[in-house]
Each structure stands twice: as C-alpha cells, then as structure tokens.
Length: 445
Image 1 (cartoon, rainbow, N blue to C red):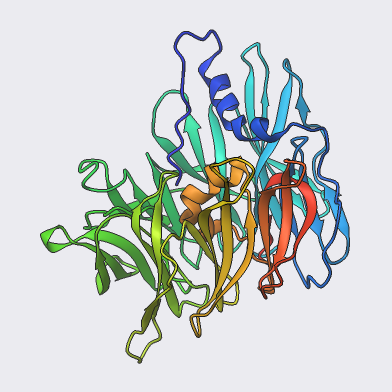
Image 2: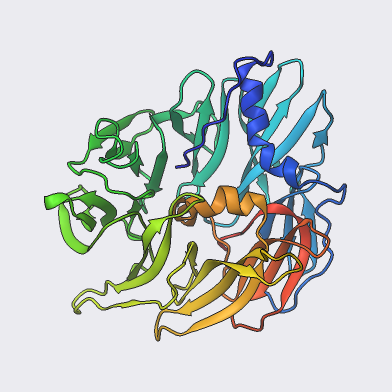
C-alpha cells in the first residue's frame, strides 16, 4: 500500500527501530496539543447503525455509537512520557462489524521499541493480543472479507521495502506474502487470494513494478506474476464478487488502459485510455466503476475529474463525467448509490492567502446530481495519511455509516483541535462534533 519510508538520521544515537517508531507517531504528536481525550461532546440525532472507531488525543482508542450516545474507551494505558511512550493507532473494523483491530506502539529514549497488534470487541471488555514484535512496525491493517484474518503492512529497519503478512484472528505466526515499495493490495471475496501491485509503474521502475496474484493456503502462499506492465496507478481491486480484477496497465503504444481481467489474470475488457495518474474503485454492488484521471497530486496519488462507468451485464456500458475537475479523494457509499468526494479550496480568511479547506460533496450516481455538504479544515492525519492513499483505504475502511446516511469527517474544530464530525449525506450542511481525535472510520455493519 503506502509508500511509507521513515527518514533515518545516521548521526543520531537512537536505534533505527526507535526512529521508525517516532516517525509513525509524528502525525498525532503534531496534533495533540491538549489533554482532552476521546470523550463525546455532542451526538447527532438519527444515525441508525454502526460504530465509529478513532484514536483520541491522549493516544488511546475509542468507539462511539452516535444514536445510542455510547462511548467506549477501548484502551487506557497510552502515555506521552518522554521515557515511556505508548500510543495506539490505525483502528480497523472487521467486515462483520464484530471486531476492531489496532496497533500499540511502545518506545522509550533508551532505544527499546515494541509493536503489538491487538483485537477487541466493540465494548472493549474482551481484548486479545495477536502479535508482539520488536522487528517490524505495522502501520496499516486490512481485514479479510470473511473476518477470519488480518493482512497488515509493516516497515522494517534493515530494508526499504515494505512487508505484507497475513495473521489469523486465532493467533499463531503471521504468513509472509511479499515485499515491495510502494505496496498496494486487494482481497478476493472468498478470502483466499490477494491481488497486489508493488514497485510503482513500469515507467518509474521497469524491474520492480509488478502485479501479482497470491493464493493463500493453510500455512503457505503460492504466487503468480501477471503479464501486465503497471501504469501510473496505486491500488488494484477484485470485483466485489471476486470474479474479476481491476488494474491499470501500459498497453500498445505506451497507452495506459484501465483493464478488467478475469480472476486468473486473463484480460476481459479494456475500459478507458488516458495519460497520467489514475485512481479507481468498484462500487460495493459491482455495477459501476468510479475513477479519477488528471494530474499528480502534491499530496500523492492523483487529482482530477471524477468519472463513472456502468458495468451492468447485458447492457451497453454507460459513463458520465462529474463536472468537478479537482477531485482529491472519493468514497463509495455502502449501498452504491452515492459517492462522497473531496476538493481542495481556499476559503476566505483574515490572512490574504486564505485558509486551505476541503470541500465535501456527494454525487448521486443515478442522475449525476451533486450536493455540497461542508467545508472542513482537514487534520494532518487525514490529509497526510488517508487522502494520498484513499484508493487503498477504500478497500479496507469506510467513512460512511452502514445505512449510507452519514459521513464521518476528521476536521479541525473551532478551537483548532482534531475533531470527529459527522454530516448528513442529504445535504443539510450541519456538521456535528462528536469527539476529539484522528483516524475516524465507521464500522461496516
């Protein structure tokens, strides 16, 4: 997935693993200017289902249910002490909505460092340690669709490449899948195969760029390298039913083409040609594909025009282009009827240069209509970690409530603290502050 590469200063006396630890914690440290934690401050009315998990400003993990007014503190031992630093990050919901996985980082200025991958139920009263390690730094978690395993990406001190492993929720040793930099992947519906894209594009790195299929067995992995030259894209994707693959490849005459392939890698349909970077995502029901073509974003990924292609069998493919041409990120609603998308803007302010904001809007894919929802001042965590890799995050996380009525946003509050807000997808324009923290994601159910 992420092209995460902590900077190492050779002049430092601190061990390399502690430097990795401090790099992972940078985003939260830059935001945590208050001792206020994850306690709820206001709840919105009418949210029908689901829970929001996030990391509070105290470094602990919290879970909210906006309708019931419930707030669960999942962890309670985070500490910002200089000699003993503990923080929790990257909460990730299982697809059945029953479990939450997250990572604990523990380090000190004596050079000791440890990462722990943990599992919890919604209330936080049943927790389980899946993995404790001093060798790697896990920083992104992606559940298998059947919620029986967790794939996770880690950085290592000894090499630049990132490490992908799969770990059963029953515990045991993680299964090695592959290494690469950058690294992106997608699970199939049966949870027994992973589609990967590593090494960037063929133009950038002809020797390292590759698209592979990995078949997972009980204690081993079989791999197949697909005969494609990767184009300028990031995260590949299985179709929701697992029957097809969606990738971007350099075809004849160096044209970049969005390719639908069978699940064995054989090309089935060539959808669109373009030049430049591309991000894309299948709708949850598999009936449409949304993609953004344009130019490289200064944050990473691409920024450009949002396009929709209808993929209904037996009908001529239909497509339309959204008028907005500066889409920085987008997320499908669970019911596949709408897309939330973000556009960078400068809002009027006291200073002559204005204030950088993200405009949040929702597209109705049936008629192409667009509703503006809100303008937010994005947190460093959202802008630096989620937005550049949003196509990968779409595979594993959701900002939508399970009933497709609300969106959770990570924005600076009026007192300039990272806030957890929700807004109605109907376009009321009112945002509700629920808590303070970062990395908010809704449960899938």
